[in-house]
Length: 312
Length: 312
Image (tube, rainbow over all chains, first blue to last red; front, top):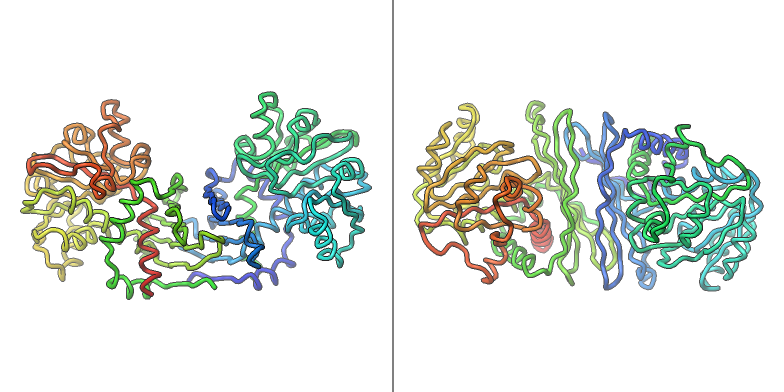
C-alpha cells in the first residue's frame, strides 16, 4: 500500500538522518557508475514564468527507484505562495509498485542541494576560511549557510543581494542562526572578503567576474541551459573544476556556459564522487582556486528519499 | 490541497466521461502545435525485466500540466501482481502546486490507449468489417475490443495468442462481452479473416508479415526502441501510415523500425490529429491498406486526467 508522507512528517524525521554521509555515498556510487540517471525531464512555462524538473533514476540492485518532481514559479511570492513545489515518488525496483509519495513541497530538494554544497566545502574548500560569501537571498542562500555549520568553523558571512529589502529580510530570517551576517550590494565585498563563496541565484548573466587565489566557489544556482552566475574566465583560471555530474554539467550550468565560450574543456573536470572515492584529488594547496558546479543529480533524491523512508 | 484519488473513484467516474471526444480533441490540439510534449522519460530494468515510462506535458494556456508514470514488469504475474502500475499527477500550470494524484495503477493509461485505438478505427478503418482481429491476449487485447464497440458494428473477433492457455483465459475473461470470439494460434486466420486488426503485444519481432487490401491495422504494442509487431514491408506497402505523434514514432515503434530498414520515409506519415482536424485525408477507399502506429502521447494523459477531475 502506497504511503503518502506529509512535509511535517518529513521534517520530523530529517534530524535523525546523517544526510552528509548518505548523500556522499550517493555521489560516490554515481561516480563509480553504479547509478542509472537518465536525462533530466524539463518543462518551461512563460506566463507566468516557471520551470519544472523531473529527475529520476536508481542504484543498480537497490530496492527502489525514485522519480522527483520539483517546480519553481518565481512569481508565486507575489501571491503569497512559496516559489518551489514538488514531490518525491518512491517505487519498488522489482515490481514498479509505488511505495511512497513524499509530499515534500520541494523541501527535500532544497535540503539535498544544501547538503551537496556542504559536501563540496568539506572536500574542496581551503582550510582557512575567514568569511563565507553567500550570493543571493532566497531559500538556498539560507540553507547553504545552515548546512555549512557542521563543516566549516567560520561563523562570519557576507551576503550579497540585489535589493536592500531582500537583504534585510535575509538578516531577519537568519537572526537565530549562529552567524554574524554582513550584507552588501557590492559583489567585490564577497569576492575580497570570503574564501568560501556559494552562489544561489537564478541569474542568467555572470554575477562574479573575478576571483582571488585561495578561494572556493560552489555555484549551485545555474542548473539550466541559460542560467549562469560565474564569468567563464573563472572556470578557465581555476586550478580545479568539479562537477556533481559530468554528463549533466556538460549540457547545463556553469561548465556548459564555459564550454560554449569555446575555450573550456570537459577533460579537465573532476566529478565530486571521484574525489569522495579517492580516485581524484580535490584541493591540494591553500592558494588554489577551485569551483564546484552543482546541477542537482537524481542520486541525491534517491538517497534522501531512502533515508526519510528508513527513519519514518 | 492535493487530492489523492483512488482507482475505485476513478472507475466510478469514467462512465460519465465522453472519452472518445476528449481524447480526439487532445490529438487535434497536439497536431495543431498547441501541446508541449517533451521527450518521453524512460527507465529499463533487467532483473526482473521492467520498463518505466514518464510522459508529461501541457496544453498552452490550459490550467494544468500532467506527469504520468506507467510501469510494466512482466514477471509480476508470477507473483500474483498486475504487470502494470503507475499514477497520473496533475499540477497547476500557473504555480506548480500539485492538484491531484490519480492513483490509477496504470488503468487510465490502459483506457486512454484503448480509446486511441477506437479513434483510429473511427477515422481510418474500412467501413465493411466482418471480423476484428486482436493480436495478443493481455489487458489491451481485451480493452481494445471493448472500446471498439461504440465505433464498429462488427461483433465477431478473431484473437491470436502464443499459447492455448492464454487464449482460453481471454475467452473466459471476455465471456460477458458482446463479441463472438474465435481463437487461433495461426496469425493467418487473423490476417485473412479480419479487416480491422489491432496488435497489442510486447513483441520484439514481427508477428504479422503480410496484409490484404481493405485492411486497417492499429499497432499499439510497440512503444520502445526495440519492440516491433509488424514487418516493415507492411508499412512500405500501406496506402496510408498514421502516427499518433510523428516525433515519437520517428524514434520508437513500427515507424521507427521501418525507417531503420532504410526504405521507409517519415515524409509519408500523417498524424492522427491532422486527420481529426481535417488537415489531412484518412482512408479514401475501401481497398486501401492503412496502418496506425500508436506510441502513446502525453496529451492523452492530460485529457483523461482532466476529464476524471472534472467529473469527480
